[in-house]
Image (cartoon, rainbow, N blue to C red):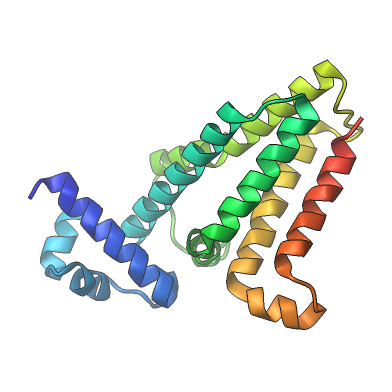
Length: 207
């Protein structure tokens, strides 16, 4: 078996473990068992659990960014129409892939500001670049809308777009962890709450 194939198998099995147990409760021993290898073999491919977590995250982020770019390449219309199409397409993708969003939520908690873990500078930069793919697409759409007159943004675009993308992620993560509780607490389907959030953004942008 090729080395990269073995690593891919380990990452796929790690995804299962993280989905079932969360990142904090998972161990290298459990990941190795799930992958059908020894811990010694696992450490040949990954230096630590955090290293496995990073590779899983980057794998998910590649999927997410590929989907965004694919959607963006296909949508038509003026700026506000493109924004609406993209937002709703991404919402549906998130709801269909809650396991990915749940992993992101566990990742944020595990590597919260209070965490003592310090990521390698190069890896951190690689991760930051991956996170900003969404922002670059939204900036392009807003610029298109401002040019064609369909978007009029009173807020500072450099504040609005990161705010919008972060709140979308936060709400998606909340749904991935508390979907049933949200429904019980408010008597409203979380998907309807998500749609309401998107409508608010679109009305803020609409000229």
